[in-house]
Length: 253
Image (cartoon, rainbow, N blue to C red; front, side, top):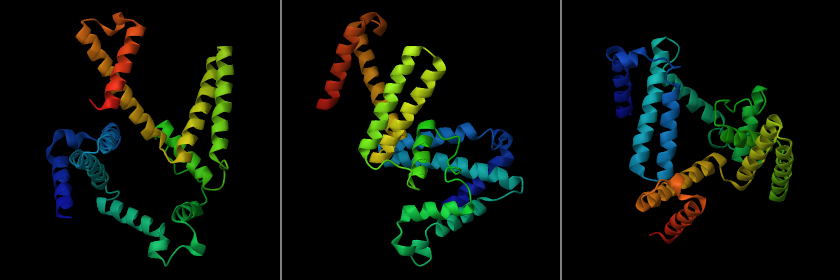
């Protein structure tokens, strides 16, 4: 806790003595908070504990700084934040802090049931600002918590086939609104596949992006070795290099 207190003191001093930190507001910090959260996710994907530690530190700094801004306005403190989340977690884990779950109820089901007591929709707590794929996963997860769910994976895959067919029909119309509608429905169905099999779509797509970027850089490297621009190589040659890059990855060389 001494290190956390030192960080709080550092942030308090920066808010007084550093013109940049003093000028910031919670609103101006939004992009930095999102960036640091994304960098922490990247570090977790890379799997280097030192990177994860550093990026979590950067994210923690953003949290302490934003909390200090509210403290400066007399609204709440970092201690209030910590106390609030501690109380919330205890309340949502009565199986640990209040003598056990009723009737053998599972931890996740108990969590969702207790959150719903406030009388809101179960999906109200899913932030609108989440990346759309991640939000699709969470909203469907909430709906599944009350039994609004396919009975098996076959039903989920059938929904994907249905939405794919509807997108194919929409493409024949050349109606951009209809195409966007059906494309969105297909993406939502695919997000449900990931949720159903325990794979977070946001994470899977981020890793797929990383693979594509890495392989495309490999294609560019082949083009550079050949002394030509990728755009001048032609699709057939680009495909050859792409397969070579994939083969190299598979062999580990």
